[in-house]
Amino acid sequence: MLITGILITIVAIFMVLFPQFFMGLKNPRIPDKLLKNPKMKIVLRVWGGIFVIVGILLIIFATIK
Image (cartoon, rainbow, N blue to C red; front, side, top):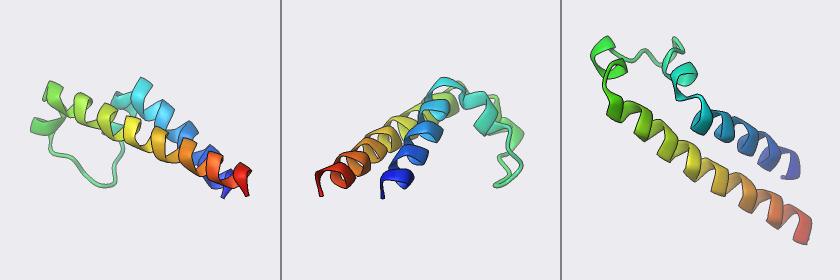
């Protein structure tokens, strides 16, 4: 659980810092109209923030046991 928490946290931090990279991935395919929408970056940053919290919680729970 500790390793999973660390991996989730690292990927989520990159999602918050570099949302363009994750928007450019081929799977799942995002239409070009959505890619150009500035709200899409905000959505990815929010999801990244949520996953950062989840990753940190996993790390905390793994170290408490």
